[in-house]
Image (cartoon, rainbow, N blue to C red; front, top):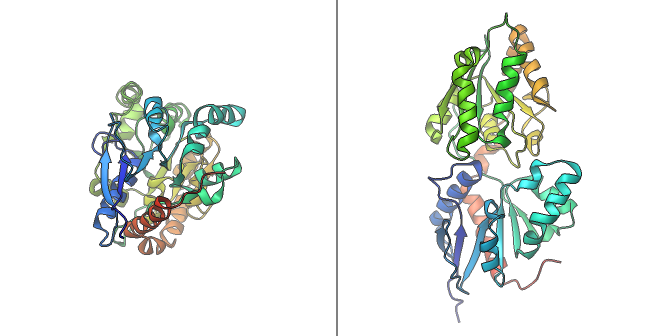
Length: 349
């Protein structure tokens, strides 16, 4: 007798209401699953507030953004669910504070899950180091699909792009304050494009935009272009000659992935998975703090030949790997995992 068709029920933020790297991943994954010619599952996407009716013919996949939703996990108390992990709050902390936060807020929910899907190596390694079995963790990194185009970049001056929502974790406020304080008065600031949503943390975004409008040098140098669709964002990747990342934590780093595809040099804070995107000294530089990153910008501004060298070096980097890994491959791996999970009765140790 044929097995009944099972529904994959995704509990995700609304794609239009919440724009983040993780939710862009979610949207691409759902579209790829629906396009698979031999997908044995039905696909259903729910956004908060959730219905508390969960059928036995469903596999529940919960985005890790809902880890703090106690009501949701109380309703899932007797149900096996899969966690789709892009990020979790304890990763933003350090040392003992991180371990306490993880133990108190996240570990128990992770242990209850039937399986953990992580979208970055950093999360996988973090969990394995804390006793989670490798067989109950699956790494599914985001694909990248874009036709390669040869771009001749001018490198006579720094023209940078920052891609990040205006939220504390992305470090943009701290960067702008330090840029204004540390940049030499006699040296013109470089042109910087800032792209990202101001809707997630409105209070924080308001402070960032006040600096952009009220600080004379910053307002002349930094242009905030808001949240962009992929086409318009990629047009900026083609126009600039540098990506800056000042985030306090990147569990994967989709903007860094995009910069690699467009062969942009990267200056970035060494946080989480960032180092996997950079060949030090060849395709960019890693820093422990924003102050050191800004000092490197000042050095490149003064020593333009050194900047031209890193631009040339990045331009010769290999991005062929992007061609081989598409969203249909991610979706196929996901479906195979769901088939295995649907009929596997083992529990996490």
